Length: 206
Image (tube, rainbow, N blue to C red):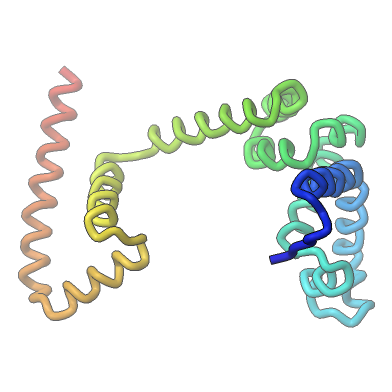
């Protein structure tokens, strides 16, 4: 971990904010340059096989961050033809928050998202996006999804482990089991589950 004992905590916080501000002031120009270098395959002329290797070695920029800068520039400046000042004023953080929605939106909806990003504080925008995603996730969930989520939550809590470790424990449990017997049990319970869901749907439709 990087440390500088000569700097106080307040100095470190100020230095971090200054560096972040420098990035905020230049992310559009940097995104443009990176986008053009990728488009015209400048990396190949420098002897690199991929653009990712190029930016990581030549500029010490993580390829994931470079991709974020490029996609932000390409979407908001190139595709949507927003002026640089508007994009700059919104800021990289908020642009990346709304990017997934803007990509899929029609022009009017995209404009609405850009207006929100201009007007809302970062925390408020983040909270609204979180609520929208939760609503979409709940709408898409079937009763099977709910059952799976409840089962996984119960198991990881009981064993006090993550999903990967849970899969390992289940593999240990099932490795010597009679699979034909398990299949018969699953078929019976699946039929019961589907019958219960059908009855619930019929009751809701009355």
